[in-house]
Length: 187
Image (cartoon, rainbow, N blue to C red; front, side):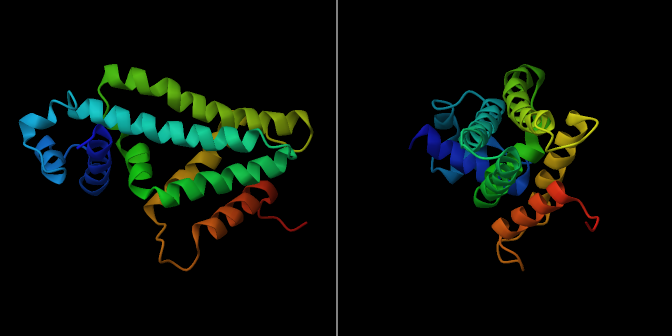
């Protein structure tokens, strides 16, 4: 039994039940430990949650930085960032659900630890859009609003996307990228 096994089990349980409905007993049972033994690996449910959230953001930041390092035009970087992000959400659905739906469950001291990572991730998206503005590729009066709109569209997809649905996640991502980059108007 490793700490990663515990975090993986907790991720699945938090995704299915929600943070508040999940118990340490649920997590202990999932990894075949006594509840008291679980505390040899973790200190609290809050610690588990913030560690899961940090793990998710570290993965997403790494994906985003990988896209940003590519020698591509900025609009193509944005397209690839959207595809990478949605593919990540689709392939790590439990982790994505916990990241996007359970962060509000953090107590203030744990939120203070988590928020800088979240802000760093959002900053990468803002800077990509700003870069496109500087190059004259993108036009938007409020980069923050554009970033939050894009993130909102992508984040909300975890509530309705189904792997067995009509479109695979990479096709959804491509359509989102087209919609965001080109809008709805005919040219």
